[in-house]
Image (tube, rainbow, N blue to C red; front, top):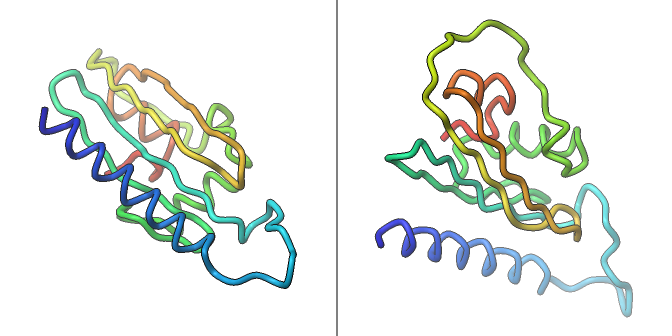
Length: 135
């Protein structure tokens, strides 16, 4: 149950942050257009089977609860929100099998994001996603 409350709190924080950004005045009658300054928010979780961690990443402007939002936003921008395309740090990892599941849900520049991928271990997770899921 603590995870459910923490996840709900993080989702609420992301939603409120998004509302604050979208409530900012824009040019008379102008609708926001997707682009680098369009507010984006992702709820990121890492599940190791016994421990689940979660954080919120906001971009445009960078922020949220992520420890390195600027780098994480650049990674997501590089693949235009398509997290399946992330392959950032090739290199060796141990053959230890300790599955880690990474999930991301939210919006990237007005487009929904739903990402789930299970990696063989934490090393493979960090090799495949760099700082995005390093929290």
